[in-house]
Image (cartoon, rainbow, N blue to C red; front, top):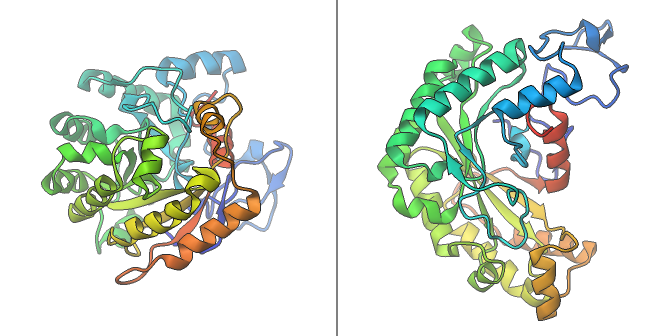
Length: 356
């Protein structure tokens, strides 16, 4: 993946995979130049046309919901991905700051179900799959799937889609296979990898799992406990080292502003310590997600109960700068960027892939 500029704010118009193709136009009457062409063309003239293009909105919604559960969130560099739901919902689903999966129970698909799902997605997307550059194994924590079943699911993915192999030959392969996907990606929770080994991740890497995204949120264990986030900072550090030891890169997500003024000092110090202990390099990513509370959320209720005051926007900016200033890496640093949860949620909705 191309490195993200250090201060780039990743939103729905900042997709690093979008070079040479069309992304989220807000007005279908806009005229754009495709692939650097000097002659403007209308959207109606652009290919590929998705298989669902002729459906009415209601028919589209009905068809979509027969294949997918709503996918509420994706990493910023993955919103133009092809989503395959190996699981539905979140295996923890008790974090006070997250409401993305409260509308459903967690469930792992059986292998026959997943095969049918993949076939339905291929039929539904049709030629529009050529606009997707990666595959995302959803929902919130697909890596929690027992290893034998997860390996079998990835075998289905690799048998169903052409995927560029990792390594030195990737560029040459891509030149001769321009429509091949650039790997498989997924979310993971820190506590999940207690039951996985380096060898497990090596097997997943051999099946083109390229990166998993882990929500560290904070390195402060007291704050993790306060927001009902499962696991500890030590779990997150161990998880990242285990994942990277298996040849899979990571995207580490740090939350800015969580815990308000009460936890701010400990949040900065312990998050710097945790990230610096992970052994990250240029193949990994670090995202800073600005915490925005929702009125009536579990977080707002416990914050009011415990007198935890939120940070101002300026205080969040200072907090993020303090964390970044404390980070150090043994070699080349990973790209770092802002993860705007709400912008990315809108991008997911606008991308024609998931939430309808």
